[in-house]
Image (cartoon, rainbow, N blue to C red):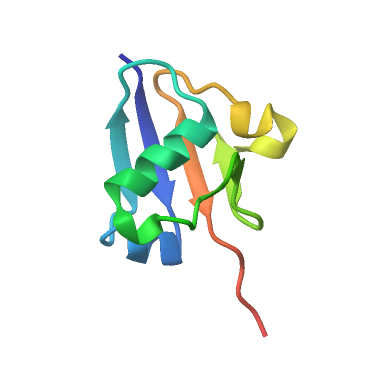
Length: 94
């Protein structure tokens, strides 16, 4: 059973009941998109923030073990036991 560590930053932290780190015991290997959907189920405040259809929401940055998923297999990146996945919301500025 893979154990995945999830780190949520900025507004995602706030929307996930102020949980910065979430440990997930997955019943099987998950992909990044499956993990994002699971997080949206666990934390209703995140619904529609992480996933947009079959893709990670635009502007959301996801890193697996410190590497952007853009440089891996994107949403289809397979997660293994011990992986750390970080979700960063769009940057605000002005």
